[in-house]
Length: 210
Image 1 (tube, helix red, strand yellow):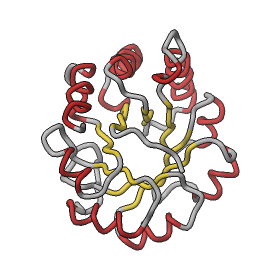
Image 2 (image 1 turned 180 degrees about the vertical axis):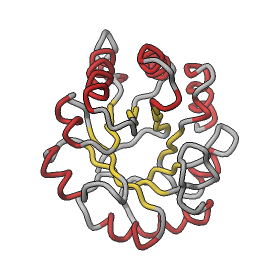
Image 3 (image 1 turned 45 degrees about the vertical axis):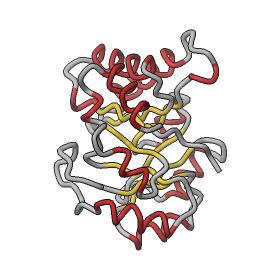
């Protein structure tokens, strides 16, 4: 079973106007101690996604001591995960099935699956997924059509249904992250609350999650 960091930072390209900003943001997160980064790009432009991903891969290996080299997770695209030599892929309920993804990425890369209710947790738990995500825990603006909020009770219920590492996502901030871990999550995935001064924000998260 994998050991997942308490903070799972998501780099959502929709929040940036230039490629250089995306890379700088990821670099600042890594400097703040983040060792797990997900690259999310819903534009569908595979060429641009691969360019970004390869630059992130290069930066992650540029002089960072081994214990602190961030793992890089590709959102949705198993093919680009392999092409960019990422460490894993995360898929949603409407993407390729976990077992189809596993055939593409092989046995060693991480595979994460999004879930939004107990039935999906139970189904995903039966797959080869390395970790499961549950959410949105709180209301979120990072998706145009978010699933219904599950709240802390949804995290507690998910914890009862799986022994796999559990990542909580959706509206999580420095103010509420500790309560999410107390409800049973192993890690919190964060987007918006890392945007301003990302290095300091990441450091603040780690202090609040001790």
